[in-house]
Length: 129
Image (cartoon, rainbow, N blue to C red; front, side, top):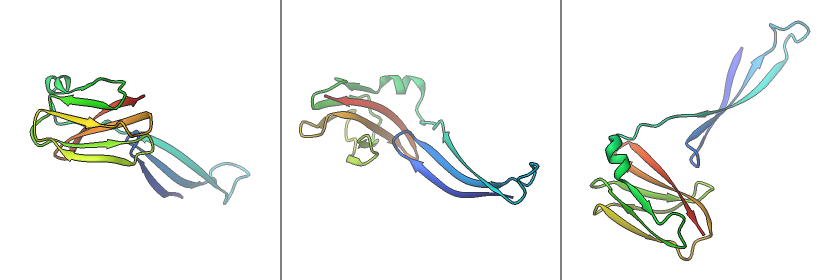
């Protein structure tokens, strides 16, 4: 008998970790024993944007020392900036095709900018030096 024990979402790389158990009765000498398994599943998420629209969205400078801009944003796009642990650093809605972020007081490292259009999201990596 197979059992799914837990499903954990990882926002840093948009993956799911599945943890489960299966009974080993089909193998000789392993009757009644359980084996645990862990699987990481990556899902391609549609963005709802055409290839031209995706190409128009620019994040610069990248790497940055603190201030960066996002250009080519669709009207009303939801912007979410996450650190490497997945913690949300800043959230806002785009009011124009260009938004500027200030990160001078943030810890250097890898960040993830999520650009949401409805229930779909486009992601861009950002390096803060």
